[in-house]
Length: 208
Image 1: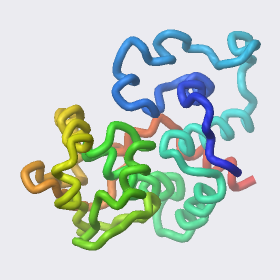
Image 2 (image 1 turned 180 degrees about the vertical axis):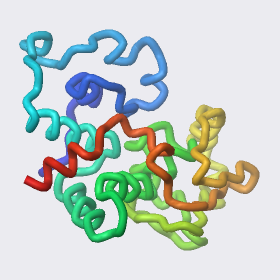
Image 3 (image 1 turned 90 degrees about the vertical axis):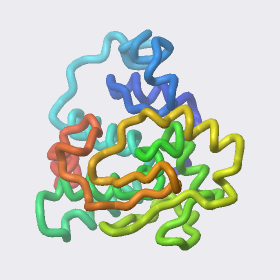
């Protein structure tokens, strides 16, 4: 399946909740959910209540769209989560949270996950001192993520860092703003994951 290229605000409206896909715009009155909280399309305001399957599908779609992951990779993560000890749904979200592009976003080094994916692809970041340009790279506890020294002088990146300097950083990430680095202290607990989804519905969807 090709990557979605239409207006991303439609995705938030379809799921009926903020997925924070547009960076700073999501925190203003211009947010599509604030202005039109119903689903897009001619019949968006007349949609009926979801069935059980519909709720499961919406949960899966919400998580996918929140992290910007395509179906094939998301299902792969689910299969990985099943093999790990613990609750499958929580394991799935932990895997998604540990993606390099997501961590870059959480650290305030990008205004959105989409921008984080682009910046990672352009090799602006390092993991344990090594070049990593794969947005889906999964980080582990103890890994250190940093901004490439040359990239720290980029006017564009400086503007991004300043704009997001006040964004709260999750406790499972230890950010050092002075040397543009951060350590993954541990993988997050469920209460530290902000994705607005009931993960057990995703497990039910894939378990049919």
